[in-house]
Length: 302
Length: 298
Image (cartoon, rainbow over all chains, first blue to last red):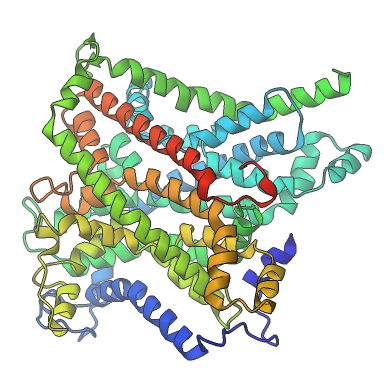
């Protein structure tokens, strides 16, 4: 099992590289570099635009390097007409709390499915998998009506409460697959030593499953940070907006449309779009190794 | 049942209880309510009244419904094969022991991490007809410029292009996971038998990877059928409804025109279409998906 993950996370520098005889390293790297350029170009272009003055943005032909560097755009985007500092705090609340809820509830459920025998277990797990294929739009209208009835609209409850009820089928699936690689003997040994099911879960299972838990945490964090549809439907007060909705609001203000700031301010839009993207990139940078190992280990190998 | 087995079953049930409650409250319950709603006319403010299948009949005669369905199908037909091929190629390229490969994987993953709203804003600027980078590059290559987002022909392909930007994301990682699961001995054996690189790819790698391809294909179709944010942010359905996708039209009916019954009917039609598609795929799967040892798909 660990043999599968090793090649992905560790590059053995001393070993012979697996270049094909036909496709030499030069052709290989040229292909990869071309692909990387295509992926990076939009981001680099956004960075370049974000550092230009309003006059330079619409210069033709476009210039790659801004002259001078207008660092002030970031400050202006951050604390101009639209309160991005507020949006960041809001997003942290509706990202971190539900992510904790997803980890806790989905790992308990996955633990139940992986370690305990009970009637209808396979059928119930099949239902979990089936929910992966149900588009969220089917439930969004009744959910809206129920939340409205409960007085939860324009609050963070629609984001927080469901997360504590194992609302992510994919996370349950991923954690269960990982838990299945942990031998049952370990639990039996722990039971003989007097550990109850919850002690085993907390003291042994979770610490052993750090990679899978990290994977679930990253997926949940990124998904919730970037979510747009949910906030669009459930939130209406600007001071409660998360960054995704805030950015969309920012676009109607600075995008040059009617009722906004008149001329489109591409440099401010790009600065805001990049600022909003930063947290997920930082989280991924820190968790990358464990994240990828979690995906591989969780056995999406067919 | 022995007392011990009974205790084990009880603990198991208690552990999955959060999911059971959540499933009833946030999935099964709402789906049932939504089915009932689809048979009513309701503007939220006044009481709903029963109209039978009128919503579905109206959908049948609604040209915008067909437009939205057509656009979504076109988006799916363009996006899914291209992104599967792109993700798979990238996974094959990045499944090698070369220096800095993990840096490269992270780099290709980058677009997946960005909020769709941010991606949409960046691409709106790239695809700007007069000042956009893409048209500038086309003109430098001596190619004709394209009125990307302002043209009824090119607006939908523009959204496809945006979607393809994330080929190095989760789909690629899942392919990579699949490739890592293929035993090295099989490749070595095939190579010893004199199979070329291309033949090994075709006769060893792809058949063994087919369950993963199937998984990515089915979930890819379901996901692309739900495309919303780019169409909402970049073009808002325009020009002339050429990017009015299914979920955007559903959103407008539900949350802008407050026709909750009509929107619920749209949601159920979408669910039935996707279920039919998935069912057909699972039937067809037996013809092309290879499972080692004849095991049933799990």
